[in-house]
Image (cartoon, rainbow, N blue to C red):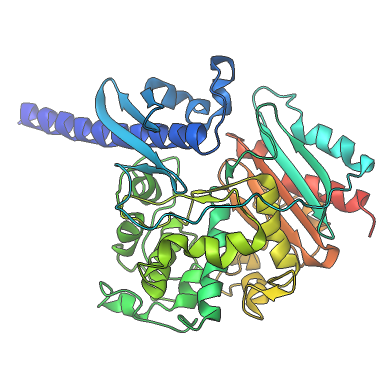
Length: 436
């Protein structure tokens, strides 16, 4: 009996190791492919830790092979569980091969120039934001752009990063999907009260409303634990060919509309619902036609999974200036150059607290308060105006909109220790320095 138990335990451990290795190989292949062929970062060995896939010590155990001719990267652990990410023009990197043939996005013209009026008084703040004085808690700030009244008043980039470098927003992408859902609601193809959103939801999930998804209160069970390589979020992103399908298959853990739970799966379900609403013909170019082109976000690359659905929880790349353009749209209440892109009231809806969210910290795909790790419980956070709202992402990606000050703040980085970046203090410093 003891021998049988030992064999069973060994088999379980080996199976778990194989699953973890598959996730790690997928992460490394995907991150490197995006870094090389979307962001076009220099992978000089002396700066390898400036790439997400090399910044985590455990991922250095995985070996990668780069095929520049075919724009693909494969990675494996001891030659096992090899995973490949391939890049398709206009749609970025996708695991498990390129998406099925679909319409390519239209050719993009260069982004229009923003008016630049740098303020020398902000230089000390930028110096501090890019300084890394503690080797145990590296900020690794990559880019900062600050718009005041629609003008660039502060801008800086780390070595190897330029104003033309598209960088991943990680979960900042969620707020973009919220806006894109708004464009569909504005066309009356969807409404906030819609239920029965997916054909596979023939049980209690049929009661999930579109607004429940936007406010992260679907009731679906979903484990958002990044430290666990086998949690729902890591399996969805790095061990599934259909992220939205994976998330939509989760069972209910609570009645829809009753419990708030932040979930990357929820946003990918919204991406699938959007796909069904706009149709297969329009869907591939829909983000660009509805939002990116009108705003001049020509650098934007929205990556898809192997099923062809935009990975709206995590994988939108854009330059810091283009992320700022998205923020400026919300300063202007969804209007850009006289044209309404978001329905009237949509920005207010996104910034309105979700009743089920603790401390009124979340709206509709926007954060209303900063997390403690970003300085959200410090005295500096209390100096941030009450109307501020934020798109926040893994490794310290931050986009803050403060309509009352007509201010947009973009910070992109590679902060493995998220506490290394005190966003609240940076915002407070800006607010204290900028003229009212």
